Length: 246
Image 1 (cartoon, rainbow, N blue to C red):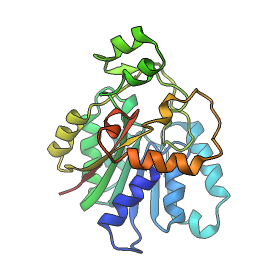
Image 2 (image 1 turned 135 degrees about the horizontal axis):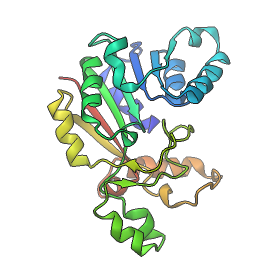
Image 3 (image 1 turned 180 degrees about the horizontal axis):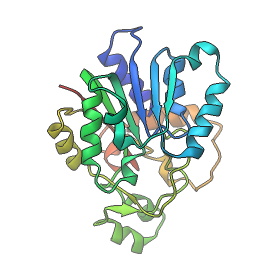
Image 4 (image 1 turned 60 degrees about the vertical axis):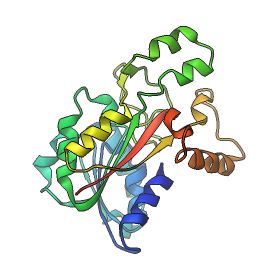
């Protein structure tokens, strides 16, 4: 997902431009810190006290030049309008958050308002069009059958709040989104879909808790290739959608 995001940033902004980034639901701050290390000014929003404490601890270990580029705000991602002015950011991230929100459209509209013209909105969501893949490939036919018409599914340890190592927030089922629905929503809020990718096309079938393999670079190369190619990306566990503010 990080490689996909970097591809979109490189395609939209001049090389070397220091971007204003808002990371909503940043979890432990994996993406926020990564982008700050790349030279961008990052504001991270997280409501979970444990996660934002973890992000602060990670930030404390960074050099001063990186620390001063990061601002952390403990708040609900639906309250961005309380803290920030419209058009304040070039890039807005919302990764692994919509799956925890019953009605995401108002939040998405608020995030779009945070973007400057031409700004990039990056969403990571559970893929509602592929909920039967994992149980089907594991031979759980009953679960696969019920998944075809499902809109929610149980989280498992490898769905993370920032897809960078922070666990999902607890609370039972998480929601899944369909590509067609989000495409319509993004068009309606003035940030139409510009590109989309699959995330965890093949690796979602790995056993929970499996270690990182020795050939991880080959694994990432395969996932990166599959994540941008049909038909593979359509059956990924997660979808990475990138909208652009008109």
